[in-house]
Amino acid sequence: MILNDHIAGITPSLNLEKLTGATFIGADISALDYLGSPKVIEKTFGTKDTQTSYRLAGRPVNNKHEIASTLFHSSNSENLTEHDQQLITEIRNTGFINWSPFDSTDGATGQLLKKLWNKLDMDKWPYNSAS
Image (cartoon, rainbow, N blue to C red; front, side, top):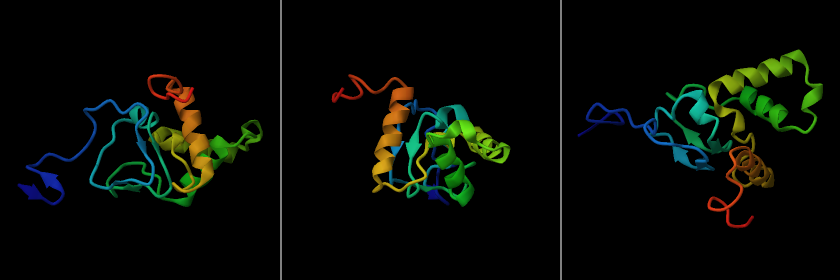
């Protein structure tokens, strides 16, 4: 029985799954109310056009996230102001720090995904056969 996006009283989520390296590029995951703790979410990847639930805490939907993510991913991160560092910390605390501030069609998204996979040690076989 389905009631208000809930199945028999269970909120749809992936909190029981291991999400390391999961990508939600341009995906509609609006049915998921929970992706896990910030430590779990920081090992996932999404884009500006990934559709998330309005109930998902910390979801990247505003300009603040876009600015902080752009600053975090910039190559000039050692020259950040205190305000910039505070923005990055706020986004890092939500877990969405590795999500791209760009949409799924932007070429920069692929580079950011590659950077995350490298950080997670998923840039070689069996995760990536191109290496």
